[in-house]
Amino acid sequence: MRQELSLLQRFADMFLKDVNLGVILMNTDFQLIDISDTACRVLGLQREHVLHKPMDYVFKDLPAEHRIVDPRILDGMVVRNQAVSWTNNQERYELLVDSNVLRDEQGQVVGACIMFKDVTNLRSLEEQVQRSDRLAMIGQIAAGTAHEIRNPLTSIKGFLQVFRKTFQEQGMIRESDYTDVMLREINRINELVNEFLLLSKPKNATYEEVDVSQVVRELLPIINNEAILHKVTVQYEAVYGLPRVIADREHLKQVFLNICKNGIEAMGDGGFLTIAEKMDPEERRVSVDIHDTGPGIPMYVIDKIFDPFFTTKAEGTGLGLSVCQRIIHDIGGHIRVSSKGFGTTFTVSIPFP
Ligand SMILES: Nc1ncnc2c1ncn2[C@@H]1O[C@H](COP(=O)(O)OP(=O)(O)OP(=O)(O)O)[C@@H](O)[C@H]1O
Ligand SMILES: [Mg+2]
Image (tube, rainbow, N blue to C red):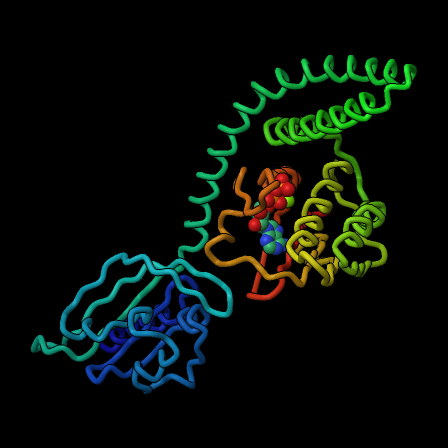
């Protein structure tokens, strides 16, 4: 009997310590009797602060419908695999919640337990799969049409250049100005088509050892130029001797430029753009934080910003960030974004060998 008890005890202990399981035990007075470490971490609670406290006190900062502990559980309401989104300190968790009443030998309700699993990774995996499906489809369409667009453009461009030369020789200033405009517009189409091709076929990348600091430094004049137009001040925090990463130099430039441009565009008129390099020797990653003091990105928009064609700008293509993500994923890195109401930080993190 004794041994059995200790086995049960051990099982219960393990339950509370299990890193994968959030457990909350409560009595019939709706008081919290015990809580597992994981539950504390995910819910942002401190065990010693909430033990033996009424649930209403534990979740006092939350409206009733957002508390994952429902008093009706004590009346026998059973919850199975309920999907709940939980945000604590800006970190978002996707939880699967189960709950059940606990009864004594006579069948009397003596309390209840709530258990949940953190399935955030699974959910984001699902989203990633959907996203890459979409990307693949767009890639196929893009690859099919981009070349067909580019070839005629090349000949139009060639003939326009001939026109311009003739116009200039004949002193036809107005006509030659028109051809300048046409050539500029053609260049814009070409750039767009190039982005398409990059989305669909990032294979023509040339990978080499790249010094991220050097890439950023080469870009600074261009970024500054853009910044001055918007009265933005650029700050650059370099790290000396960053390890080299394996990447395509031009693609990497495009990533930083796109993200910086987004930051500058978001600020509209005046603000600070900070580019800060970081190194994580344990994770073997080099990262670059690009922070702006703009209005931030609303929660309902943030999930979509990496989608191709998602834009909130009148002149935007919405391809910028999806191309960036494609490039960084291809070299084993990731782009994270955090926006806490005021200002936005994009973190580009790249592994080094
Ligand atoms: N730093 C930022 N602050 C606020 N919103 C941002 C920021 N960066 C991106 N966004 C949002 O993400 C959307 C998508 O960005 P993305 O770069 O993919 O396309 P775009 O900038 O709209 O178009 P394009 O890059 O072709 O000019 C933007 O329209 C904007 O709403
Ligand atoms: Mg952009």
